[in-house]
Length: 331
Image (cartoon, rainbow, N blue to C red):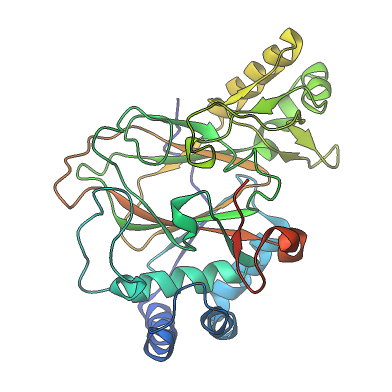
């Protein structure tokens, strides 16, 4: 995976005043609703209401990103508030304590992401938590999943899912020890003009399938999505759904087209070594993301991100969620 570290992501760096405003809003929500589970309707309503009071420059940036995106399909926000006392990085990939242990970070991420749509979770994944912990797990180093620490291949998040997220938020609680792990992303918008016409034609046909992540299968048996295209939507600005580790095709021409897309995306990658308080938002409709490898020490201070998902139309999944719940039922 070749990453041009000089290729900058679209970035908004918050100043001290804006950070204090966001911290005050997050603290107010935590103080009033800290006794509720994170997916409680009253808490999420409060998050939506207070998100309307986010600093104006941040609100404008999020509105533009929601409506128009960016050429690279990602937006980096730097300097969000962080709790003073941080628990250890969870050894098993899930913080065992209440969400209020990271009250400011949790609510700040939810407020920002709620400006893009409705937060959603999946019962199959991370116990259906709305805000999930992403940390290396001992023994899982080689896995092509978020518990690993080796190179994580480029992918659309949960591309196999009928209600996959439209946006992904990755909030950095702790960087890796060496500060060398790059979260990388590439967008179809960056490479479409250079793709051969025949490649695009094949990528628009339902010739591909994606193997479900192990968390969605449970029994260890391989399961696959139905056949789907990689590219959909307008010719000049398509959406993309792809997974270069778990996607396959039985058509050799389609397999070659997928390889061509990968080559072009890998030449267009931008990456960032995330710092504490960074929130990287990925437009999952047009961009793939991944991560370079890093060395985990399993000492309680390893790399720790917190992730949440957003959909622009929560009603589309209403038949697959319990009433008043944001958690999608198991596949």
